[in-house]
Length: 132
Image 1 (cartoon, helix red, strand yellow):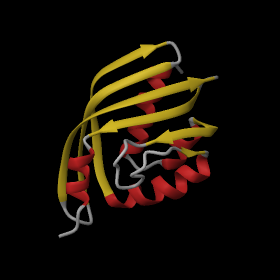
Image 2 (tube, helix red, strand yellow):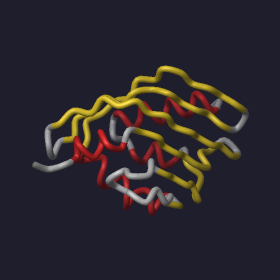
Image 3 (tube, helix red, strand yellow):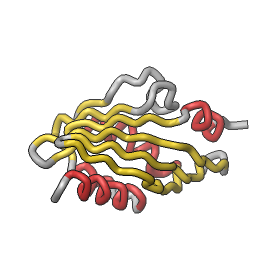
């Protein structure tokens, strides 16, 4: 599977909450980094490895969000895929909607995801996730 096809496959699996299929596409030592200021990891430090990713991201984000991503532009440059798009989501604990521009940088090695880096409007994300 080409890198672009694998990214699109991962987005489809994420939409359906299929963490196991997503994790299968990741290298054992995958580096997963959310945007600085993201409520799940404000410092922007990456999680390394599937266990850390599962513990700190999938177990939180999975039950808390109904979401999709609309892909606007996908750039493939060798072992790097850059995706520009929009998150459209509802944060279940607050019922607030998110409609945010997003950019993801995917890096591949030997046909698996070596790293993922998200850039998103974290001020909007914090507002949506803020409890009244």
